[in-house]
Image 1 (cartoon, one colour):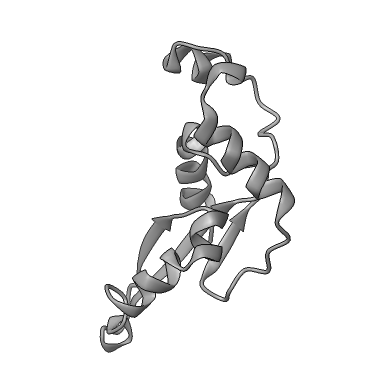
Image 2: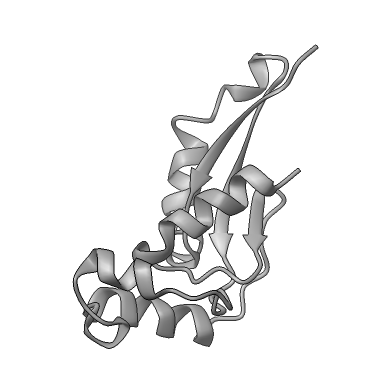
Length: 113
């Protein structure tokens, strides 16, 4: 039987503030009734990609420093919280945990196995 994986892009803030749990308690509560269907939350580890991000920041039309308060707060949160993931949460290495790097997070989801 083939398995189908539902990938959910998340972040450490959602994992700690109850948003991921709310998804488990509502949308995912009956997922086990469907054989072969599973899910995982994917969270960036908050570290730099180690790649040239010139094109990324050019697409936002600004520099990383001018990206905005939300991303900077998210990065600060990511670096300051020690978080132990739950069994259904995957921590992606070398992946900032902010909106600007969502593409990196999705790439990590495809690479995960």
